[in-house]
Length: 207
Image (tube, rainbow, N blue to C red):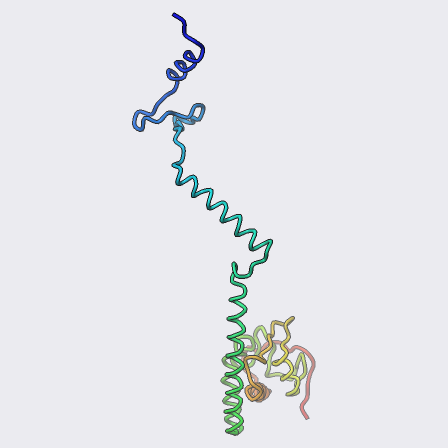
């Protein structure tokens, strides 16, 4: 009886091809470790194509962001739009507050009280509750880094000193609020609170 080579090969594969007893799926030959054998069980077509789709989407996203610089993908335009709106609202509120302050002149006691409120909200974290100095300099001694005149303080508040960690407050405080907090800061001179920070800058004597 004559058996051709193809039939012999087929018969040999069928003899040596192991099958899992539970799933009846053939084992993937040569993939065995610690008694565990890999089944020749390919992914279902729908899952395989879904995987291909995710690759296409990921590649498209990278092209849009890093090659075409599409800001809408990373919401940069939306961020700038919201920041501009917030800045505009702040500027309007500052102008309204300035108008109210101009319509009602304050006494010296009211100016200092208003300045203290701003100081406690804005300056306390860096200059201490009593102006004794923390990260920022001491306001109670006679030494000043950028000058001790009211106009010097005004410049620091408006322009900031970024290399010292002092930001600009021109968009957060109106002119009246700035003058009020300057008056309060200058009133701290000579109060001698505990735990004062060491003197910084040059001595300034008021005339």
